[in-house]
Image (cartoon, rainbow, N blue to C red; front, side):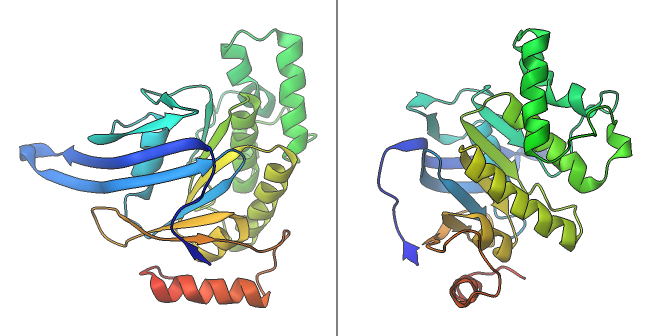
Length: 259
């Protein structure tokens, strides 16, 4: 179902975000054009768009890794002026410390915050269990599959106790079967440990499976919001459900995405 605005108090507020990159020779690349989006607390919002639509740049601006040329981002009413511990990040690349074990990677955030060793080990153990990696605490990244590495990344982000989780195409490198498994795990973890989630993908089925709302981006630069869909489907969702297939068809027909 299409909708124009989601009512209620915003956890994340993006107001008129425009981003222009200046490249060599002073060439201007207009990447985002007046993006306005509110995300409620504990809401799961998916930004759906093809490559080169500006969706990852928008996520990086919310993360504080890029500065908007115009507009602002607020978390709980506070202006975003750089990275912060209230935002957990998971990228398509696994970004793990190769020289640290699963336990060492997951406990890194609490360790940097000065959490005592016993407490941070308990925190890490909780999230390692949550993502289903019991028994792998002492394994190194090179000993893990792609899906397991991404679960370590998710556990590490959660262990820092963020209010907002930002995931940028986290399953893009995985095979189809592992990707589907990770989508199920992500939905399960979100329902267990409620957080506000903003998730970027170019996969329509993934978006419908996960989202409370889907924000589609136009398939060209500068990136503009296209249509917002509310996903009123019960969880857990089935890809063969008629309502799922109907929404999939509607989004496909209205977008420039490829399946």
